[in-house]
Amino acid sequence: MPIQYYIFLALALFTIGIVGVLTRRNAIIIFMCVELMLNATNLLLVAFSKMHHGLAYASDKASLVGIDGQLFVFFIMVVAAAEVSVGLAIIVMMYRNTHSVDINFLNRLKN
Amino acid sequence: MGIVQILFWFLTALALVSALMVLLSKNPVFSVLWLIAVFFAISGHYILLNAQFLAIVNMIVYAGAIMVLFLFVIMLMNLNKETEPQKNIWMKIAGAVSGGCLLMVLISLVKQANEMTGKTALMKDGNIGLIGNLGKALFSDFVVPFEISSVLFLSAMVGAVVIGKK
Image 1 (spheres, each protein chain N blue to C red):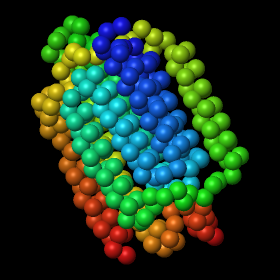
Image 2 (cartoon, chains in turn green, purple):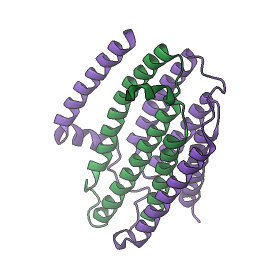
Image 3 (spheres, rainbow over the protein chains, first blue to last red):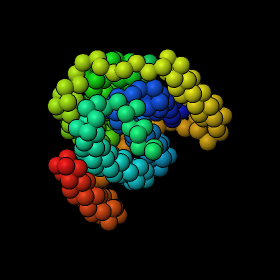
Image 4 (cartoon, rainbow over the protein chains, first blue to last red):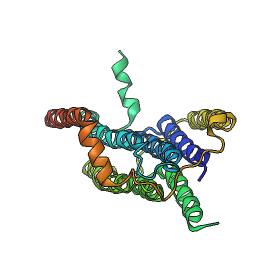
């Protein structure tokens, strides 16, 4: 498939994530939209890695060009898992203090 | 249109519709379920690109572990009802318009880029996505980031326990 289709799909998913962060007030849904943006980036990295691999594959069938992109996706997944564990702990703590997950309750932090 | 094209468009439509439903559904439990559908569609894209290891890891880690963690938190806090207070309608319109402007700017930028025209992603050939090649690269070239990520996991685990116990 042309690489532009993958770029457009990843851009659409990323923008949906951004709109979700901007418009929703539930902290958990905002967190899920961040996950959506990370997944859009992962998809684009895999597509680009296959694009570079395709150029080298035409001349050498056993080349490993482009494997770095897929390992970056692996590390992004590692960081996302760590981020989710800490972020959900913070949301649980916030719910214990304010009995809500509405982010507008957090504007008392500004004083 | 071959089977690869049909699967590509089907998975693309599934991913976009599910991602929109994550935003539009009022109940957080339904949002989580739609997000699982997005992750399965993205795993299908990985399989189409012959990135088999990442497809399986995406399904296990994201759809299996992270989403179950989200569901546990939502159900522990008893949030599975439509309790979200309504934001100002103008704020929603402003968010949607600004996101749409960003999407249009980025799409026009990509359409103009000469580097991207005529390039294709190798669909079902190529062996860089297989677990043997990825493992060899991970434990030879990327062994230091791998160890550092284990330290990151340890600190995240300690941090989650410390924050959760307070």
